Length: 319
Image 1 (cartoon, helix red, strand yellow):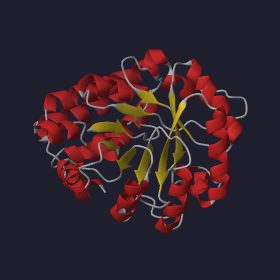
Image 2 (cartoon, one colour; image 1 turned 90 degrees about the vertical axis):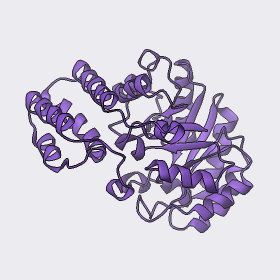
Image 3 (tube, helix red, strand yellow; image 1 turned 60 degrees about the horizontal axis):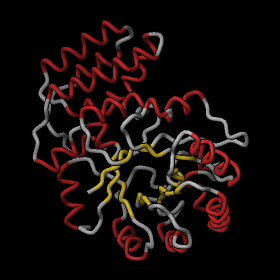
């Protein structure tokens, strides 16, 4: 089984990625938070920092692009190739209303003819491999029949399917029947993405889809960095490694960011997920959220690791 780490804006940048890979080397591909191409092919300082080869040594990283403009996609893919990237991923999954309103991300799915022309042009003029991360439609999963016809026209590196519509956002249950139908007709390799939060979730998915050998996880790994190891090997949660992972991420942010407020904002984003790994953690979570200075934050984290046991969270704690 190949495992991919889904991008989570503001959290899974190169600092988090490097720490995770150092301590839990079980990911076959990491995907960057989306890059928004422009007509000049220039990357923002944040985007450039995230894809610099020196920030991703020994890590398989795939930049993700969010656009409905073929020229911008082609220009940015060419720029990324200069940095050594041989694959880019087209984001057709983002459900954010600000993105969708511009017919980007999963909003682009509502314009299948335009999407078809876009893919034709980028495959004609892009030298790197192209994979796609998609939802099953904007408004209805019935849209996916037409979308699969379009995807099958092109030599996709792979198709990562999150079987929800844009309207579902992250609510409701992934439509596994639609995923099964897509799997049966896809002409390219397929990767599954959606609601794998626990070892039991992964076990159930494997039992139903034994022929799927690629799975992308996101929120489940943010809560429990050891999820894959536990599923593969029956490994118990290792408190010391979880603490070391936290310290590596925290130390990384302290090296590159300036000011307590900025650093704490980044760490609190991560803790909004990872806190579910700890039992009886409500009061500690409150102290972490309310900390305004690094010493207060460190004191709250120390107390959490000292006084709260870790365990695999229940599924409903994360959703």
